[in-house]
Length: 516
Image (cartoon, rainbow, N blue to C red; front, side, top):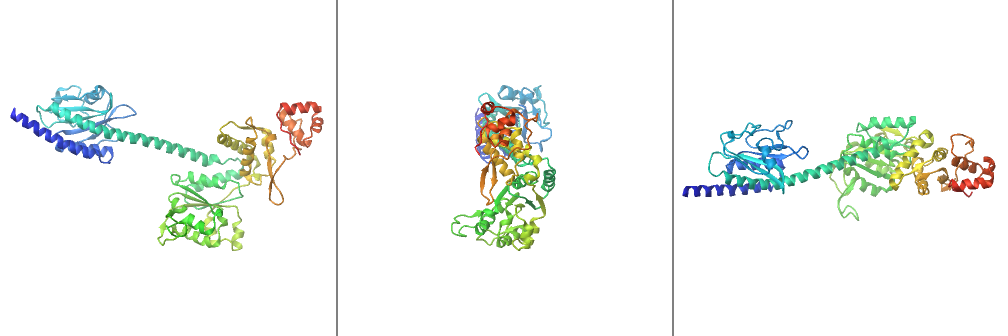
């Protein structure tokens, strides 16, 4: 009895010392797999529990997957060892949620020996790793090194270790769940951004736009500097976005800056950054747009409007990939792809000395010319419907546009290009209480000789045949009113109606009369 008490006392000392080491391991911030390996190592070296093995429940299949084994050099990632609930000794422990003590492993017919690791002449202890009341996240198993009378005590000790492991497993699974959610959100956002800024965001079947699409597809593959040319409102920024999000740099940042919006001193700080105290108001160090775009793309809009002095500073960064923050002498290396855009005639600016010739050639490696809207009228119907759908999403309601309204859009020269059309349609949508953008709610901007913007009435639809079979009654009445200068009596004569009849149709067709 005395020897037995001494043995029990020695076993308790071993278990306490082992528990302390296990708790230290589990409190460290190491990855779960590495932590489990260390725990099994401590059980083997100090806890007199050899060939330890941890199997965790796969959340997708519900099967037990062997995650860590002591005494086996590697676990195959391609063919993981798994046990279904109720299958073998481990599956039985998972299914019942109770510990299993086998005094001699060879006597258990359900033992499958898939690991080819355990000594069949020795005992085996398997205990569940609990995830919560009635829930189990895995199984912990190990072999005592010899037969003795302390199997129940060893089993209780292994349950304590399993309870400690359970906390780490729960924490790791929660982190994994959050990682999966964040990954799914990231992938969803990337798909949304690529859909919003990819090729689908540029509408057009005209030859001019097809040429632009092909150039974008080709240049997106490389790190080549791109210069997007074209009038204001033609979609130069959309091209920059499409190039970035279809390039190998799509995972990096896309940073944008309108160079015309800032004077030289602020432009230098904005692009290159500044150190604390570099100038009045610089209370903190700040990274510039070049540093922010490291590993990604920097879009420099209105590049033709920067001063000759700043052109020289910009040229050095483009040539060398080096810069210094304002107020610092430390040289920083940046890896940035440049996409620039301008509506200016840079060739003339080079001839007059307003734009550096060497910077021009540095930027004009791959020029892409955006066609103006008035030169691709065949794209207007698709573009109008695309913009109406975009506005509908912004306003959170259903919007449609009639064919007659689209015909009005096709008669306009669009000096402001796509941006002007979008503004026109958004204004028309606001005036469309029923969600139908019809011909009579469209108000087009025209530029006065002095450049001031003013609302003008629709251009007369003199070219529209009032007897054409493909126009509906509402469009026919509006066309007659336009041709009659919005005088109902004249419009009635054009349509072979009485003034009372056309007044009735104006009312029931919900036509907004114009006062010219």
